[in-house]
Length: 114
Image 1 (tube, rainbow, N blue to C red):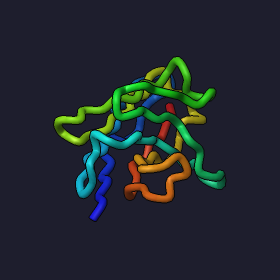
Image 2 (cartoon, rainbow, N blue to C red):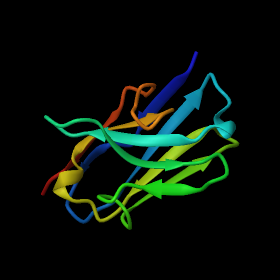
Image 3 (cartoon, rainbow, N blue to C red):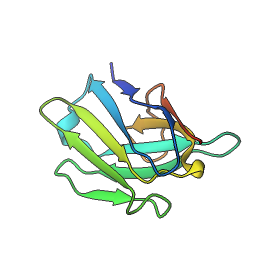
Image 4 (cartoon, rainbow, N blue to C red):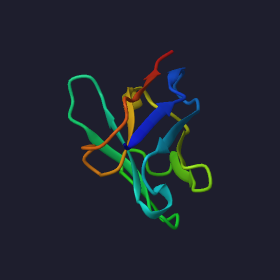
């Protein structure tokens, strides 16, 4: 059974940083491209970033230059470093097996507010 468990969310001030983690099990993590997606209140699910099995990373325009996706294949953990956060980054963040979030975890809430 595929399991994706996100953690690390919370309340952060604008301009601050936060690191999200996603512990995975039930599949060969090191062979899969992995994704972060997010959903803000009242909005559709949005692709944030993805990273290939060999570490090639891609970012959505809204987070490029501020967020960093990484992975630890030995531990089967996916990370997302959020830097210089903005109020519009407030959302539920999910790690996912696909870009559209069809297979994703329960999410971790990030709230950016002063």
